[in-house]
Image 1 (cartoon, rainbow, N blue to C red):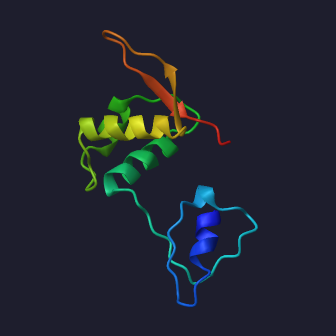
Image 2: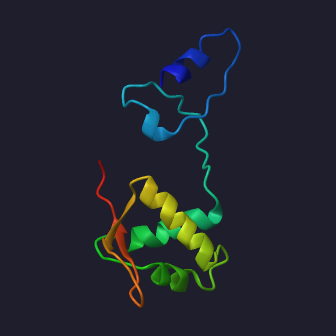
Length: 112
């Protein structure tokens, strides 16, 4: 957040990109500002399916099947990569570890 405030100290107009989780609630924002997403359409599609499954466990197959026929459809490998990123970011957690013949089950991690 300090870097964001430093960028606005010059006399010229500044454009600053910030991840919203890095902003404090008391930071004044410009109501005319644009909201951008750094995520691909495929990543957003996977996240939407996960959000729709809130409160229940789901597998990568569940997401792949749900996205089948979607114009943002992504392949199994991309879904696996998105899941790995969401796990690393703390948005998904493993409910049931997989193994031979058993799929991993995931759920949305609670906020905080």
